[in-house]
Length: 212
Length: 391
Image (cartoon, rainbow over all chains, first blue to last red; front, side):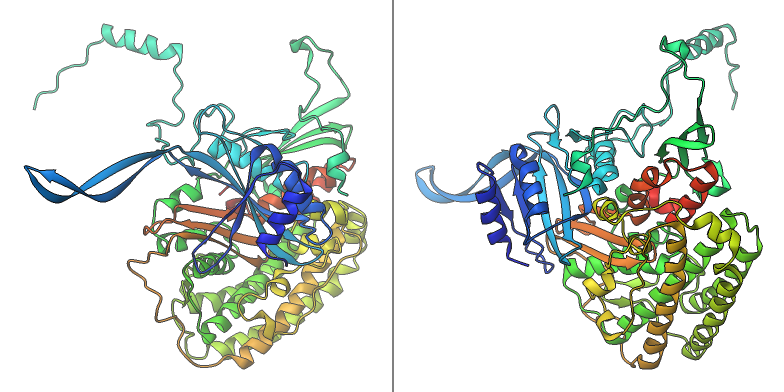
């Protein structure tokens, strides 16, 4: 298979305006990936699928990754005058890095038997703009997996044919695979009118004091 | 190219809403909830089926009854800590689950596997394939109404392989056997001879099974042309494993990736022609015969030596930051593990690519227009284990 650099160059030529970047992977697996901007993700994915040299007709794995907001601290040594004497002082600067949700697709070719090409898409933020374009119209194999990403990470996939929760129940509110997810005390707690009645009735029957 | 792009958007509302919603009531259609507590669904799995008479008009699988967020649990424990938990994904094939996870971690951390361990892995994985396919055809025939007997014949054979696995790993099903860069313990004395006896005995079972069943009139009537899965749809919907090959697509990861030492073995990939339930049944029988070839060669060739990479650490195992996707040809299809490391002892992201779940994508397409009895055997021929579907 051709290198990721040539795939990137050819995809940029085929899809005008697409902004692609290569995400390096320094682990021994050396599986580098291709980061694509949201507006052109669908067109780039379609190019990857239909291009005669790539023919990535098989979307093996689709998954989400959560990157919460984080603060990057960098320490720099600065020379400063302290009480008239020049000294080296360590200064820490804090940089806010906004978080995002990421969808990762592992694409292979069944006809040409090569792969993987790893495609990544990132949402603008983790709250109100957690939207990506769905690749299910291209690969139906992504249908359940994108539903699962929606269910567990909360990425909304536009033009997905059936975006519902898949593993959690429909009334569930939160997104359990996010890093900042806090477990509820009682998963199935639902406030009912009955609770108030029980509280009221307890007042009529005060609990006997337990003597030690 | 693919039919998926041109097809009109499908409606996922099940029934036309009945009269209490104000819309007209369609008296001809019946919505049936098959499962979750039903023996033919092979676990806690439900299908919402809309029937017109006895014909299926719509079918929606419903998941999640066995969901315990395996991935989150694994992200909160060490790399080795989730090795025993991978057994519980597809509890028929814990050894292949172990291997897929070990393979992904080995890619992530750059560990080598000694030769003897590679052989043990191939032997155990192919034994697992025998166990899985043997059980599956038993269950499939049970779904077709051959109550009990074929399943018990299959379980008798499975028991022999499970005895081997038990004497090697200490457990029949929850093996927890592979380690990063090797295996947990060496083969006990006399194990290879015992394994050879089991391997030599297995073709007898297959011959018997085929003579009794494969040309059986009822089996042919129930399976020929039922649940046809076209080639293009199978590829587009990421179907893998025997189900894909029954549709005639030549794609076996043992041949494509040549992970482990599969390049040293000669074996064929059986392919189906029609993609119906009968092809899926036959593919499993033929694959078992190919597995037996691999097993014979591996049991003859296995060298002596260490079984674990001395560089691999059990404690304080922290791979460098990065990511890796490792996949193997499990008995049910492509089983993949996607890991992201941030340099800490726990994986930052741990993802299982479950073949059982993804193979269900086309369940509706295969069942439309057929009867409820066909739905049961089509689901049986997909080969799902709910521990893996719901995770």
